[in-house]
Image (cartoon, rainbow, N blue to C red):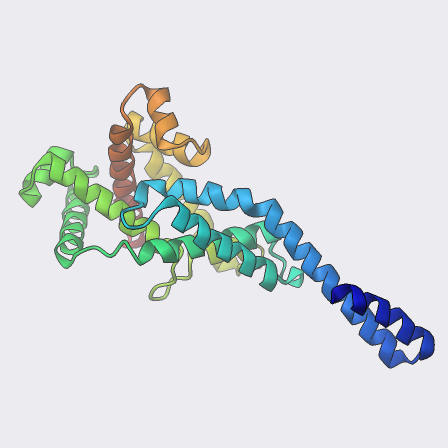
Length: 267
């Protein structure tokens, strides 16, 4: 059908050189060109879908599978290629990352709702940690926090991992008066001076908070986020088990969240 259309358009232009038909031909060509570009973008950025999903493997729980997240991410990429507007400053790579990650997060969120008692425990642990940190200047040890919560160390680490899942599936979502992290990054060039200052201060505080982690937690954060190693690769580098890497990663994120909460509260 498309071949016949291509033959018909030149014949019509030959018969009638009106501006109207020339415009129609030009629009048809541009439409085909845009579709081709979208296909190229989709093919080029499929590896990004897998990379984002691989970062989320730790959070996958039955009945959700790796393939489910890849499918969701691919849909996000297709929509990004369809909706992308080059005039909005953000590079397609940035825009696609946000849309893919958002689609993956939406899929995860559907299967990551925590029971009310777990949500309550996380809030309680956060409050206790804030109080101890404000009083002593440093985060409580695992033993101190477990004793305050009246749970075992194993239960404490399960709480850390639940808190990490909650953090992961909400980090790109707008809530209350805070815009999503992804949106902030995409609009970095258009931030107002006060927002730019706030973002700079946040990065400074985060850097300082990472420095205050113990050596093993700091290594894991750097290897995971800066070097972009997987949990399995980090386990090989540090010569510890992968489950232990996951535990320490969850604990480090909990500590960082407490430090940043303390800063936001004026501490």
